[in-house]
Length: 289
Picture 1 (cartoon, rainbow, N blue to C red):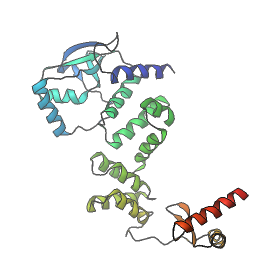
Picture 2 (picture 1 turned 90 degrees about the vertical axis):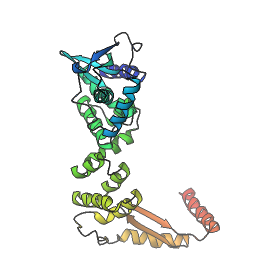
Picture 3 (picture 1 turned 135 degrees about the horizontal axis):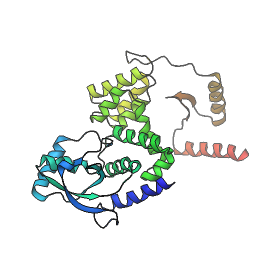
Picture 4 (picture 1 turned 135 degrees about the vertical axis):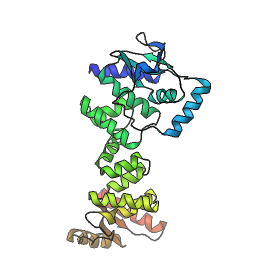
């Protein structure tokens, strides 16, 4: 519980602006770049070179407007948040950079770095998912607890973590920006790992949209190497009986079927008047129950 309290204070100070007024234990200063070391556990693994060069040009003209957040680590200082500014400052040829120095525990460093990147939308979906997994593993958080800390829903955390179920090759495609999270969720619907990879490659080759990927996903399940439509499973007898009974009861065509591992009932109607009659019949039947 004490750990959670520390995180809350860290969030307040970090997101409120890492400067001298944040708290009594925060010191603002400048440090030589040679004394500052990147955090090896930084959630963000890749920095867009063009983006760094643009920021570097801005720093040459205007300087570093917001201090980076660091902590004392041995004889040097370790970056907690602001590595992109640090890298751009090096690129701009600066010898020193403004910093906010704070006493931050090992437990909080990764959490604060992850949150800063999330706030700035600087992480690709795979980096984000890996960050969530590390926080859960290292701190024993549930998905719901982590969601509250990061101001995200439990389902958002769960959906992000599911991306790590993709084959590594597909994860690499996402990390490189070749596939979106929407594409990835559609690919996850494919049953076999080989099918997932084949569908991902098809998306890249043909530039498929997310909707097109969703429509193709059922054709790539299992070991179907040709991409041909797999043979349909036989309709259960219980589905057929239900169809007959519903058709008689509602006096219209009814289908009971399985689509993408989900069971569905489809009821046909000709116009609004017939729809209203169906609603009356169905709601009347429910009242009778």
